[in-house]
Image 1 (cartoon, rainbow, N blue to C red):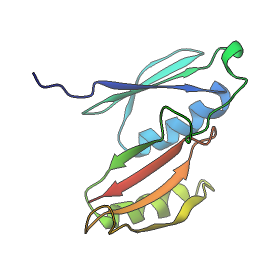
Image 2: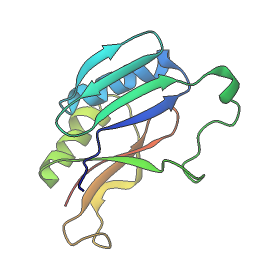
Image 3: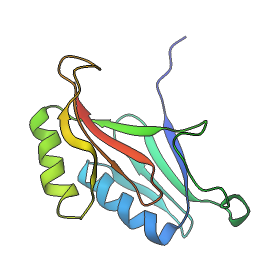
Image 4: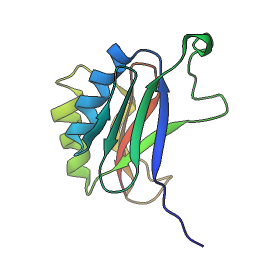
Length: 132
């Protein structure tokens, strides 16, 4: 048997804050909205869908931390180092989104041609645009 990842579902703290962030980000990366309600939104592009749902109040107390068990980060692969730089220059900088770890830069410890920019969403979920 073989399988492909169909979708990723992320609980977010505040739809009014996170939906606009993800709409800008994912539309810039070529995703389209397939469904939107007051508390959830789904995006589709070839490969896996991405769904966001606002966390129920009773589960919001602890908040997100990528060092805990569970999701660490999401990575979006593009075709070249130039596209990573373009994403940084045309999306992150104009939207005032700070990068992590002095990126964009090469990460030869991953693979010889690994190049990435890391950043966070409003809930501090780590996101990455990369090429290898």
